Structure formats: C-alpha cells, structure tokens
Image 1 (tube, rainbow, N blue to C red):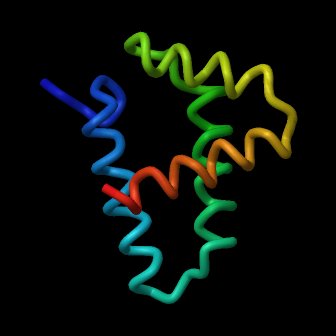
Image 2 (cartoon, rainbow, N blue to C red):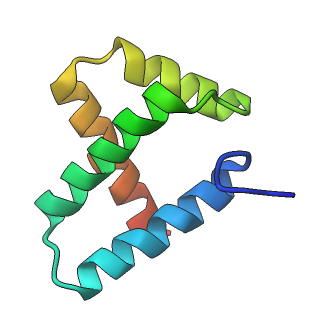
Length: 83
C-alpha cells in the first residue's frame, strides 16, 4: 500500500492538494509557507523516514537552522505548485 509517507510522489500530490485547498479558502503564500514549516517540524520530530529521499530531506532539515527550514518549506510549496 502506497501512502504519503512511503512514496515521495504521493507526498507531493498530497501537499499539492493541501496547498490548493488553502489557496481556495483564501490563505496567502506566507500563511501556506508557515503551515508547511509546521508540517515539516512535525514530520521531522515524529515520523521515521521510510525511504532514501525522506532520509535525505530529514538530514537536510535537521542541519538547518529555523530560517533555513522555513526556506525548505517554501521550496516544497513552490515545488508542488509548479507540477
């Protein structure tokens, strides 16, 4: 069974759907990026990476300071918006 936590493409689709829903209810880019940062913090703290892509992203997240993590969150939002 493929879930958002086991397949990176499924995760991107899930995030894209959530970003679009947030836009539909009027959230601005800053609020969406803040929410993406909070999700990233949760995933980093509570979810064990299930594959190499997740492990690499977690390692990058873990070495970053708060501003760098916010940048990663904004880039993830940007990534799913262009697909």
